[in-house]
Length: 164
Image (cartoon, rainbow, N blue to C red):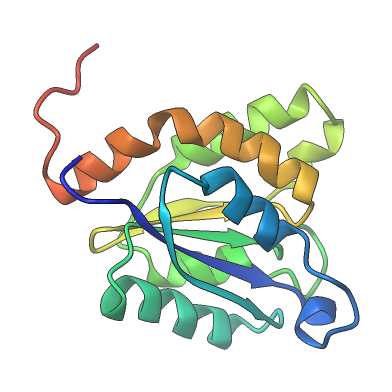
């Protein structure tokens, strides 16, 4: 890895955006990334599809972060629109990431099957939807973090050998 991994953290939550509930998932992401990546941006927005799209585009195209981790808005509620926003901005999907996270999460709770989280690529930025629960965020990151360096190296065109 030639330079540090740069990430953005975007939390989608109506209540946290209004200050009605403390956001714990964003800090959980940042804590898990300590020593592994530089957090270039961390924001909370309401569950508004166009606003989420705008932020994802800004992080990928202007800040040029390697990864955007979103939290929240991946369930079945009518205002859960993070996956739709993500799909709208991505050029390619990476379903294995969210498949692996759901599979591991199913070991803890059968409610994991209700997640609509997606992962995809915009340019050279990987966007990964995480759940809104701090506990679930940590569990899902435990699945992804072992491959994060390789994912970023590949996106940057730095990976020289993909075989184990």
